[in-house]
Length: 257
Image (cartoon, rainbow, N blue to C red; front, side, top):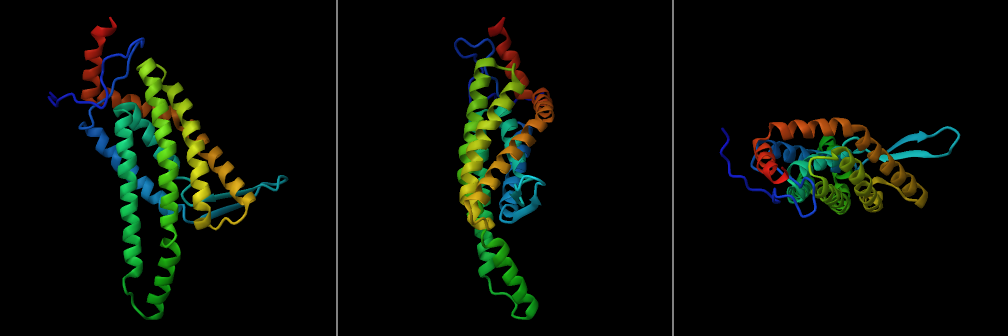
């Protein structure tokens, strides 16, 4: 039997006027460390991938170019993980995950810079590799800065909306929370990120920036919305298998009866 103390970021007592109240698991339970590790990995890899500009061509008959970056397939996963963490552990835990993810990303950038300045081999292969590292990893710090500014603002808004909606409705309305929070967070994130990261990616015109930003927003929201059934299923599974979450649900039950 799990005897871990039931400490939480928020109280399990239903807020005034709420029919259900918000219940959260203890961060010391087995799932939080896994989710945090996944978020850190996704954020670091996104920073590397996003330093490459990607052009898929022009949509026939529209003149609209499909401009994105090499991290486009990864970054929505960070928001999905943020949704899962917020729903299970609360907004404070989500903020901690955001902070730790970007501290890890900053550490990665520092390591890239050290690797670049270390003296390399002076033969043709070593010189070519040094140039490649400078070209590939050199601009990553700009992408990381863009990611910090965009993701912190967007994911914080996303987590805030989810936590406020959960405080009002409790366990009910999970799908609605996921739909409502995603659009707002992604809009703020995409505008900030694309504006700062454009220089590192190689975007030089306002038109390219607009295409990059609009496509990025539509894509990220579409991925999150399409993934909502899976996200909700994962959240429900983690809730069922987390002993601290179930203990708080049982402790709340007398207050609702």
